[in-house]
Figure 1: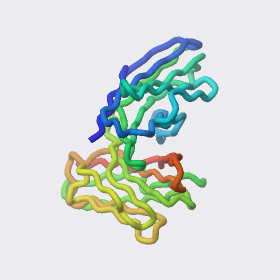
Figure 2: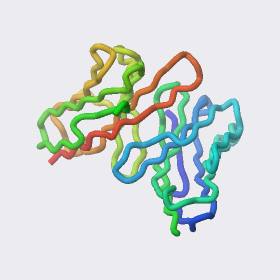
Figure 3: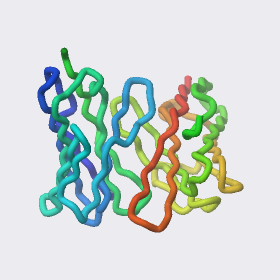
Figure 4: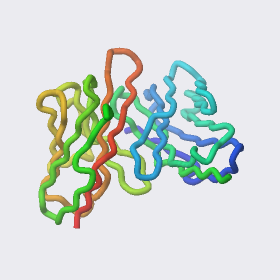
Length: 111
Length: 116
């Protein structure tokens, strides 16, 4: 089955700096890669996703890049703010329904 | 609130007891998913429904687990003879599959199960 690895497990940045989280996947058939943000005690919420037919997608301060050859994808957050502090999960899907999640990255943005 | 809702939010039970959780998806969504999340881990897929049909079950879903979505609306997840290893957050998600590429899954707040 699909195996998704996520790094780093924790990340601390200063407000205004950029944060990068990286994920690798094992199933070459995976074609959908969402990123979820989960604040403490709250539900996961989709922040951005990318399909395998594009290499990059951007939404304001958030961008995701995908390298299908290397089977890795990354989340980039620019101009970080304290409210960006949360756990971020990457996921990959080849089936169109089951999402296979990484173990998460706990991001702390300090003022 | 028009989002995914789950009930109860917390459940404490003794080992060996049966428990049942309910999920109400976003009203027009035809797909419903169950995931399990343990501390420090990402959600793990358990099963999913397209309307009332259960189309896929993970190997994580042992014989003690059963899920239903009888009318294609709400869903229930039952765990029989609970074990301490069942302690986790059980998340429900729903999506609207329209045959196209996009199928964003919206998550509910989860039911936290503690088995003593």
